[in-house]
Image (cartoon, rainbow, N blue to C red; front, side, top):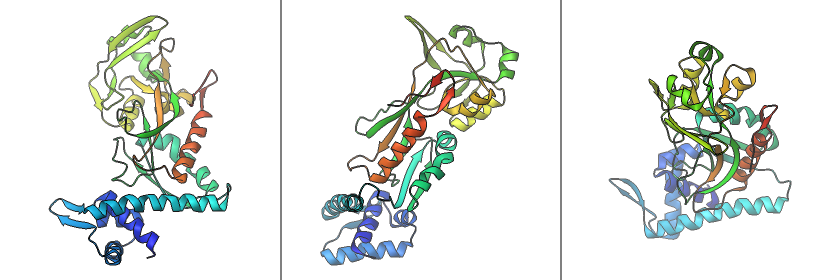
Length: 306
């Protein structure tokens, strides 16, 4: 293992907190990772990591080496691309994280086009509705929706979609179609029990505002469950149009109260804090931004991208 590869192994150990975690991300055996770190320590003549009851803890030298090694790896990648010119091919592995439903509907179907553009690139897609620790999970770029509560994050807004009240034609035929937001009190709602969901919503129409609280016997902690509950006729829901875009196009679901507006749903490309976003991560974010900005749910509306 050359010096740059050994540094990358050490960086992964630091970010995952274990030799086994680094090995999984690098797709090599754990002994190879342990050997790489030991070789660095022998060459430098200092201890970089200490084993404790809580796992691996970096020494002062280890933390300093990590900071410089991380920067060196990123600079090496950037230098290689710069030397090859503007048409340089991206290579290596890119780790992307996104919510399950958004990725299934809007990212994975487009991966072939992205990989066709960059044939030397490999992509790991981590699907999780939770906001995972990007550094610990070794993520290069995450796609997150809604408001970003952590002001320390390095992020770029790459898209925006409407929130809508959505249900199946069969549900509205049986329960009636709400004419005003206040009518939602008489409907069964599927509650997305995560940040960005919930029961309290404010509808706006010009200067008018109506605050409502949805009621429902079904609460779901994953967007996939919300989709299946709505498509199964259990009730209506408040959701971004991204979650139901195929069914909105096919009229498998209907949006109601469209003359009232709800807070829009923003899409962000989020990069690990404390280091420059890699060229691979930036290219992926730009690719998804282009896909989202060109996506249309109806003839009257096009998703806006910043």
